[in-house]
Image 1 (cartoon, rainbow, N blue to C red):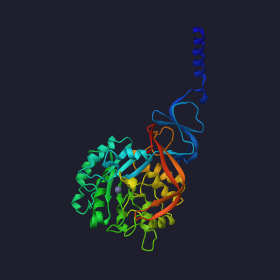
Image 2 (image 1 turned 180 degrees about the vertical axis):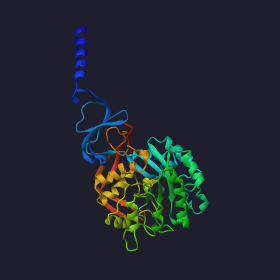
Image 3 (image 1 turned 120 degrees about the vertical axis):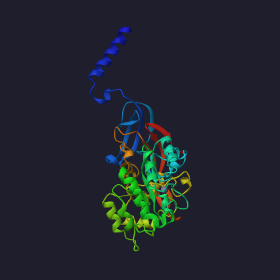
Image 4 (image 1 turned 90 degrees about the horizontal axis):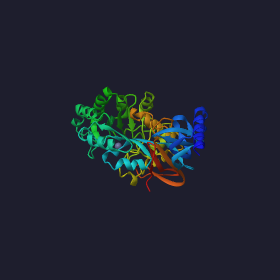
Length: 395
Ligand SMILES: [Zn+2]
């Protein structure tokens, strides 16, 4: 008996020493996601694959991965993507927000201006305590978002206070937000944006502006943006949206995109997009770089519902699935350096994964004016994997 055991041990050691082909290794993974349709625009992959995960990282993306796994998820018939990244949310308002987003497949988020210098520390604390990676843009107005318009008094846009807010939260704050509509800023829009740049530019950070129904025309606003800055609510209707009176895309808008300004969907609830402006702009070839929800904890009962629902609005407009996933993953990751090596299922990347189901049927989608469109497909969240660990979707 002893002899036989010794013999076995010796032959295992010998086999290991001479092992050169991968399948001779006896590998144990923490998690394998089996048989899903893996859509990863970062490497132009759309195919049925298994994904192996160990130590919180992607270790293999291959057809039929052999080897043991502590846990297996059967993703047959499902779509498997990198975890979704939502760059315009208000998830930092309360600690309940981030776990709700995780149930929707969102493994990275940015709170876009809920907090200003006076209250960004609370937003930053929510971001630090979130299960997934959360970041924040500091509102140039010291109060953060307010219902009666945080930039009506230009004194609220205090450069020194905003800079101080960034510097004491540099681990979390990744840019500056300025809401420029007339009911937020009145005639202060251009000066508020100049002050936002005065904070952001020397720190190498982007500014995100919220457009639509502004006092000043985009022709005056867009030249104040630098490469890497973000325009959210890109399909906000007139006055002062991206279309002229005849519904033509303004040349200033294509010029801004050409020099590296990014355009984000920003679904929202009120006055941020109409089907008419969305359809007119996309017919002229003007599609988003990124999607985002403008999410808050009440969004499930509005036209937002969840990030996969917002993505589905572009399937309805016949944007290819690969491009839809790109706008919610790799493109979003590229906007902020904090998301470097996320938004991808590449080997070595953090194992943040969204498992979605593309259901066929009749689904109704809402704009911000109670306008509806019916589509035959909708993406639903099924499960999320965060740092290699499965988290269930909402019931
Ligand atoms: Zn917002």
